[in-house]
Length: 517
Image 1 (cartoon, helix red, strand yellow):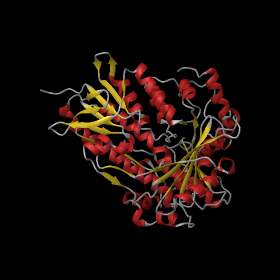
Image 2 (image 1 turned 135 degrees about the vertical axis):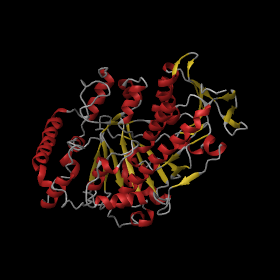
Image 3 (image 1 turned 180 degrees about the horizontal axis):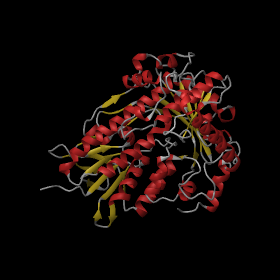
Image 4 (image 1 turned 30 degrees about the vertical axis):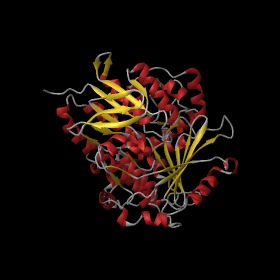
């Protein structure tokens, strides 16, 4: 007889557990006794990491899909708008060294590629605008500290593409309340004391301290770095990727604003240091700041000194949390009837905010591929593992790209990052091709790509990479390129005069709310 999949047990709360519960429940829970039953058990004694505060634009569609009001999200999660990321001192280390990775595609992309035309113009002009500024008006909006929409713009719609910064602790609690009150998720606060496996090797149940035995047809491991189910119980080993990415420590601190009405910076700031980089994320009531670094290249004391120098004398006494990062992922992500999401599946440094989006994508994949029976689960698991492994590999390539393009020589950390032995072969191949043409969609053939070709262009050309465009036949559509550049300048002039200050819009949303779609 076929064994239907009717119940899911999620072990672990936090953003990983509750976001996964929300995404699956929104699709599969249909009411009492109908659809899939979802139980989430989380410990009251184990805290959450709580520093994943940057998102991708995908979070907008995720929140909308699970039935959350964007207005409520801003009111409850200390959230702010994010246009993208500003990378400071990554190329030369000088004070004037910066570039943007905006969240909008270049003007006309992908049907029209402005990169070759910008490259030719920049070679001819000594003071040509940066790539992102020339092809996308979002950089100008960022530099002025503006929001991505108007108060009259409906929820989840935008004048420009945007994501969020959020308070991870508040966000997890917000999702929990929504899941329990609106999506029918059963919530148990308890400690798991034992994982019981059946003769087939599947997880049969988890034993809890107070609530007894919890069963399920599918178990989702959201237990964080411990990986209680997939790692400990199922014995899936951890694959280190520290040979490629050297970051293995983080010092995280919350920095209050000097003035309650201080500007909220509408982008993530990543400022390179001697042995890593510092993130700086503006929320409504504070900044989230952290230094990620390589313990093989510096000491904890030296890293703390760099962080304190960054936050300034006024905040020198704030005490950061230290987080140890095991850079890598599980050898497989779904084994038997157990699948891991979030830190239980792996973790990479938080450059480009990949942690939360991997939770989103993993949960969405589980939800859409949810096997109807145990007999089909192994097929789903195999496909899930192939897709997820591909995504991890592409994220690693993209993160490494930032390091190999740096010209910094002020520490062994930056020099070692350019060692060819530390660069994946897949990235070496792409770099060989991009010496003669800009990244394009033809370089990314999978429908599981993490970053579009435009993202590679922003990083490559933002960091001074030069592509030989002599064989591109640029004269064939020079008129189209001029029109696209001119359109970008028109949009820049319009929206830099029209969009409100980031804090002003957030204050209005909290007071007035956004129009429902």
